[in-house]
Length: 232
Image 1: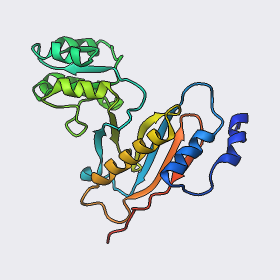
Image 2: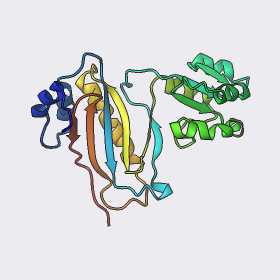
Image 3: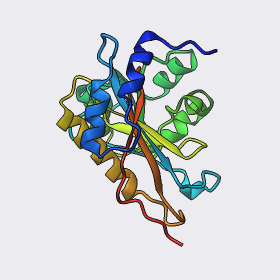
């Protein structure tokens, strides 16, 4: 029989039995008994997409209106003349061949990698290293861009990346449990709106099937999504 902690037992009666509007869902999540540290609040959206179809594999990024309460460590692959700008924008390291060599040797202490288009041929050799970790720069995610400094600034300030997994789910952090409820609600609605806007043209039927938010160590609460519609 699986072990159930005292906290989880205490939270079970508090868990709503039905989907709630965004404001009420956020309030419910914040009422759970939680550990002493400031939990992250996550959203999971289950989509009606066929991930076997390339054009239905979503990947992108969004700047949420209230941030997510955490800065990210960003590295920038760029030419020597851009390095000072990237560092000034908040990159922890920036460069070309020398940065590639450092990562090949095992250094991986960063959360996001951005690159200028002309550097992709240089970093292509890192595909096997960065790809499985979701760190390989990609035009779809906005991490391959001519404006490296601006991308560094945005991702350092916690720009959120998202991508569908094989089951058609999209996960993202929308803030911290210490955020005011209104701020979490705004971030939640902004993220859902972003996913609505990137609906693949080939996706049929109900697009957004289920939305759930949760703390990193508390139960999930289903969010009522009223705009879901089916298409023949």
